[in-house]
Image (cartoon, rainbow, N blue to C red):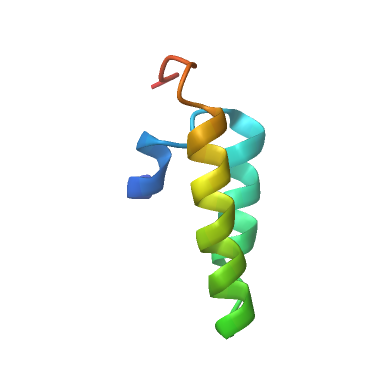
Length: 52
């Protein structure tokens, strides 16, 4: 199984776990929350080097 493209920007293990949880939900509100989460998580993880 390959990792999602968002893992390039979300670098912490807890952030990646939360991404998988949010991505599994359905509905418009869930997709909006996922997008918001990716934006915030990517901004917070800019200074962290990639773990992969």
